[in-house]
Image (cartoon, rainbow over all chains, first blue to last red; front, side, top):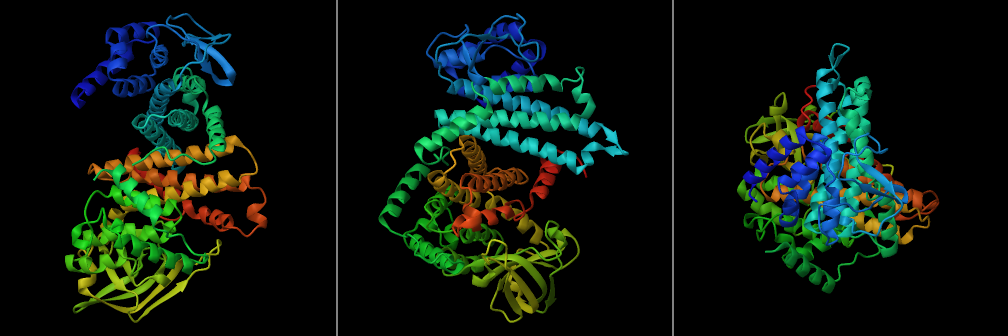
Length: 263
Length: 362
């Protein structure tokens, strides 16, 4: 797909996600040919769709499709997914409420599931987390420019600027790991990319929350949605903490550090 | 030439030609070994790829140089410090020196016949580099330089220096020269530092006469020259430094007595993230994208990963740094400077805030 068609697709997806979420968005994505895109152009479709979910704050149960297709199964259904702490969950394709953080995600605990391939799902979640990080950064940046204290925009204070700079460093670093993993697919690369993205989103949450001050703690401001989303997504298919430990375990087993991204 | 094929051929050549360093691990020993490796690589052409033919190179993409740096430094055949000077100063000479001067001088650097240094920082001009005060005054066909530089790496081993001077007020009043360090009036004094390796020097200039044809660019081009050099410092140079850090990390994995898998994984994640970012940067450079403030992100990631690695060394080899005389000690101490040299972490974050996040003035 050329860059012009990709841009058109991005604009269309963004518009759809601005108005629909959950079951409705799931249906809209199906209508747009999501499952076909996943089969025919996953290298473009997965980063695009999942990054936009993060940036717009919408959600849809499409992680199921990525994992199901990676397992060689039909898309469109659900499959039990590993969650932090050895838990298993099902991400339903309904709008049925659940006890998951944020009130809006139909994610339910299940007793257990069968092992599933996780690399492709981690790749997708990584883009979602990076998108969520960018959404938080954008909100905090605008607030820093708009909010005036001591007679000047708070964006002029170095303490604020450095937090936002640190947020961007994390996001850009994570994005590079995602791009490199897709260029040379490898389970460890996807694991690291998911860990980097989870860490970047959690860093963004911490710094942006602080920069937004009181308003960012209200339910009225949308920041909290992105923070809660990031917490849930970070825990999905292994939290950044768990994945980091898993990477360390792999290093001990190998006895050296694999150089995963080549020029 | 395909990068993968080039890497495979280089690896095969290095496997056949033993360039392992000798037992002398002093700074002097490292410099001698560096010279030896460069000479061998130049004679076998490896050192010439990625440089233009006008300066003794064989052409090809700059990425080939990163591959050579990664193999040579990653195998611990040469230390990354002196090697990085070549990578920074050669493009500067190609872009700013008169054509004949570059053609005459650059091959000497690539062959390891000479070491050069970079006279930028001053006692009063660190983060605020543009405030530098070392003066150059025109006197007929010459310029006369007076002032003091500091943190000039490897000046005591260098024959020439790319020197920033003040010729007029402001950013547009900075002018660069290519100065022979044996010119009368130059005094080099190595600094003692906390990690015990005297690579940084103070360099004094007292009525030093520099011919006008040694000017790099035109009067007032100095600031642009300094800024243009950053993408090189932060692409090919970083790639070899990353190779060095991975090599040291391998050593840590082999030696670690504390099996803390989270700590080990966190150091790896930081290194891997840095490596991926550097890979992206080099692809951008290869695609002809201008690299400006974006490389501040690479710099923050490098400094963070390097300090994280050596903090992990201290945590996973408890007692080693404090009680045993091993290379870890000096390396750990040196890593403390990673957030200071080459533009402090704070300056990088200022640049990111101003130029990438467009947050307006402080």
